[in-house]
Amino acid sequence: MPTMLDAVVIGAGPNGLTAAVELARRGMSVALFEARDTIGGGARTEELTLPGFRHDPCSAVHPLAVGSPAFRAMPLQRYGLEWLHPDLPMAHPFPDGTAAVLARSVGETAMSFGPHDAGTYRRLVAPFIGKWDAMAHDFLRTQWLGLPQDPVTYARFGLVAMQPVTLLNRRFQGEKARGLLAGLAAHAIAPLRGFGTSGLALMFALAAHANGWPVPRGGSQAISDALAGLLRAHGGAVHTDFEVKRLDDLPPARAYVFDTSPTALARIAGLGNAYRGVTYGPSVFKIDYALSGPVPWTAKAAQRAGTVHIGPTSGEISAALNAAAEGRDPSVPFLITAQPSLIDPTRAPEGKHTFWAYGHVPNGWEGDATEAVERQIERFAPGFRDLVLARAVAGPPQLAARNANYVGGDTATGSAAGLRLLIRPKLTRVPYETAHPAVFLCSQATPPGPGVHGMSGHYAAKAVWRRLRGGRR
Image (cartoon, rainbow, N blue to C red):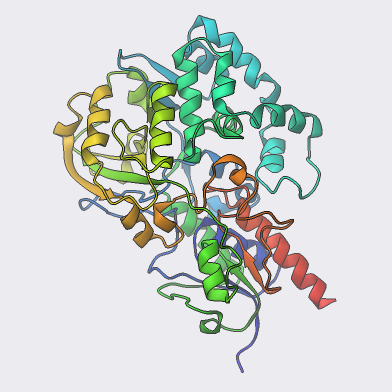
């Protein structure tokens, strides 16, 4: 008979790796199984276009990773993780060559909005500056599990956070501030009029002011490789190329922790219709570019930013997200773009660059948005197409094939519209536990939701630890 393990983790994305590390660091025997031939999930790096061009197929810029309480408690730098910071975390250009910016400095950010809105922005963020650690602890979690660390800031932020960003934007007179905040809220891949979109926009802004929006040297794979290195150092085993179709495929264990979609967990663990009510949200259409030179942005600020949002107005951004949510083809997409090779020379051959861009499309959409995406980029960077050496295109079917957690291409593993950012994957006291006492869910389908921060894995590991420690008694 094989020895029974304490925990088996299914899926080697950032949350599965985090859960495995945290259990192994508590002295538990842990094995991790990944269906693909490499670990990483949404945090990987591959040569998608041409030799020597290293692209991140999914996440590329990591404001929540560098400020994650889970990652900060781990010595990941010992295992090769190095953060690189661009001059500007993010630029939001306009067709006239100007830009709003999200800078490390609150003052620089505020001034980019113009004199009418600078003071409004300073007043908006002032109560929260210098309080990132407490806020990350209080908001990157299931809201009803435990008391907040800083109750006053929690209440103050909560009053703003619960609003739709469309309401928050009424405080501002000009389109610079409104466009930038709408673009930040759009990371939820849900309509901007939804509950809680102000909270998302503000968290991304405060993350920039506290810790920046860095990229890992060498690509997002560096985060996953550092976590795996730490896991192995604590005796954990990592198995790749191992697709799990049922629990019987796995070695016996006291706990099975799934970094998968809720749908896959129910199928593999035999939980029937336990997650039949889960709704998957819109998808994205993503293009990775190999370029012969840097993107020729008209706005000078965009030339030194790690991330560039292309809207430009809050109205256009809202219309693009509504189209994706309502099943319509993209015509003028809102684009989130990243240019990591500006600050990381390992990403491309000398003098060349990698560039990463995505717009929003309906779940399961099978069209080709390449022309719409490039037409939008050309509005703000005329001559961009002349620099393209190669492109790797991925719509919803390709994203879903690459990562089984992205059902219909939903990179958030479950809709974040309305209350679904807080209540995911369904209303339950401890979302990391399931109807099966030995089966747990740790993917971004659970709170605090999408992003490379490991916090879903962190809280799932706590739930496993409580259950197993109780069993030992």
